[in-house]
Length: 476
Image (cartoon, rainbow, N blue to C red; front, side):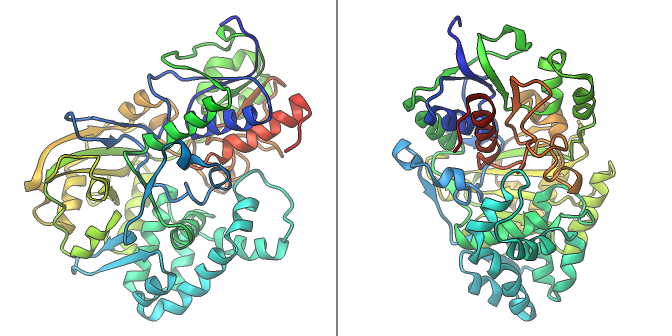
């Protein structure tokens, strides 16, 4: 690697590739370096258990894929990306056999929420209507808003703890549905700003849906890298960077990595004060991942749950809130909240006829190596009696195994650091352009920068814009 590059990007997650695409479009020469033999970071799909059964290893359903201003500006369909949509975006079953549903139609969703139908519409409708502006104003570093009153209205709701927001609702179904949405924030519901994720996921579900990439999450990564290389970008696989000094000559380097890894690779190039800030960066709860091969379909008590690719398993708001709180304190609930996806039911490229793959995880304390597979299986069985009898094969990944597979998942944290009020816009450090480091040649473009975790590419896009302005005097 004797060639000199304008920018070298270490890591090929959605943000690393997004940065590469943005820089290539601006006329720069870039190289993306990936330690694995495939690109994608959290967007990988593989035959984890048996040949012919395609499992999403990390991310599975992609609510933000079509809601991302960066992704929607790209023509990824011409690079092979195809999305599949289901009748319901998410299902939330209860012990009595009934369920709440997030439908693409806000009216249909609201009608299923009884006394809360108007409250739900009043809360979510404005976000759906103004999503384009809200997305541009919130999915990046903090900037003074062009429409401050509108953003303030959204912010007043988003900054509330999910535990406060739930008091708007009277119906058990609404409260449970809200808990499932809010649990995607992977933090206690009492935390300030824990409502933000629940509001956004609900709104984008109505506006865009929660799509499944045909063939697996790898299809998103493959489409992005196809576009990147078509623009002249270069890619090097199977190379784990241990030290920044081993890189080819460059003007700038960007890390699609979290602070812990950056300190190891490039700490000697950073100031003492900045290193201390990175060392104080906080990671959130981890996840325990399970994959199954089953005969037939999941036998939900409420058959309508089979019409949703995503199913939230946790029963009532109170039960889910208690489980998330206990886990955040280092405990292990007997009945954890389980995120479940059944992609192969809607995508026959994932499994042979008559068989299905099932994707599931629950939250666990960061760094946990405890096997909680029995609790996960019991929770699925609770809402789908007979599920266990249909299992023909399965695999598990604890937080250590997840981190070994994807080093960005520190302690099993899939969000690149907890996204609470202290690390919402000020991640990984407090500055107007958090993509910068103390070294003018080094930038961060991972989910440890605003707007945080998720397959949307916005961290990489904003980091690239900063690099273009700072290092090449190019404004986008």
